[in-house]
Amino acid sequence: MKKLLPLSCLLATMFLASCNSVAPYAALPIEDDAEQVANVVVTNAKLRQGLRVGRAGVRRIEGSNQLKLIVPIRNVSKRELQVRIQVSFLDLEKVPIGDDTNAQVQIIGPGETHNHSVTSTMSEARDWIMRIVPNY
Image (cartoon, rainbow, N blue to C red; front, side, top):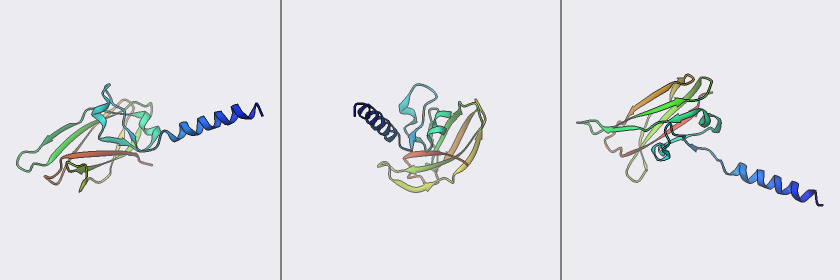
């Protein structure tokens, strides 16, 4: 009985720890600024460890008022990463406006930084969310 209690405590602790991390995960930043990557999620824990995301450059295009963004994505792993990147544009209440990009496949070599650039098709875009998934 005395051996069963520590074993059950260990198993319960391991179970609770595994429940703590559920996809999608917030992306890890290139610099030490967690707030800058709040719009980027990675759907795979292993992929998340190999990627870092930099501060997004966001601006309006004159005349059309479309939202343009450029997001640096760095491969910090020792192997080539193949990912699919999809962006959804949102309104001020963070509700999708139906302006989504196609999932674009990118191959990012070890140590390489890819600047992912997309532009909204609608002028109503006020915010955005980027999803990065492995391309199997």
